[in-house]
Image (cartoon, rainbow, N blue to C red; front, side, top):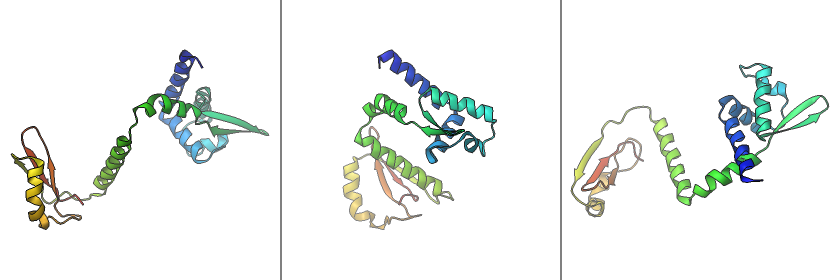
Amino acid sequence: MPPDDLDSAMARVFKALADPTRRRLLDRIHADNGQTLGALCRDLNITRQGITQHLDLLQAAGLLSTVWRGREKLHYLNPVPLHDIYDRWIAKFEQPDLAALSSLKHQLEQETRSMVDKPKLVYVTYIAATPEQISSRSTGRAAWFTRGPGRPTLTSRTPTHASRTTLNPWAT
C-alpha cells in the first residue's frame, strides 16, 4: 500500500476510535465476536439507526468484518488495522523498560485506590548527603522501619544538592 493510502487508512481508524460509543461497540464485539445488530443494540441508550451508522464507520475503517447468515448480518472484529497502527506508532517507541514502568504504575495506582483512610503520619526531611551515604548509615539502624500496611518505610530520592528522605506509612 502506498504511504498516502496507508496514512488515510490510519486516519480513518483513528477517527473511528475517537468516539466512545464506537470504542464501546468494539469492546462488545471483542467480548462476543459475531453479534447481530439486535444484540449490539441491547443495553445501549442509542437508536438502532445510530448504532448502524457507528458500525458503518467502523467497517469503513476496516475494524469490522461482516458475514451474512441467512437474514442475519454478523459483526466480527478485524484487528489488522489496529496491528498496523501498533507497528507504525507504538512498536518503534517500545522498550523493555516501558513495560516495567507501566506495570509499576498500575500496581501503585491499584494500591492507592485501595487506601480508604488517609495516612496517620508523613515525615519529610532533607539531608545534605548522597543516597549511598544515607543508605549505608540507615541500613543497620532502620530495623525498626518494619514493612507492612500502616507501617513506615524509609525511601530516598536525590534532588540536585540534597537527599530527600520520606517516611511513608502507606508503603508495603
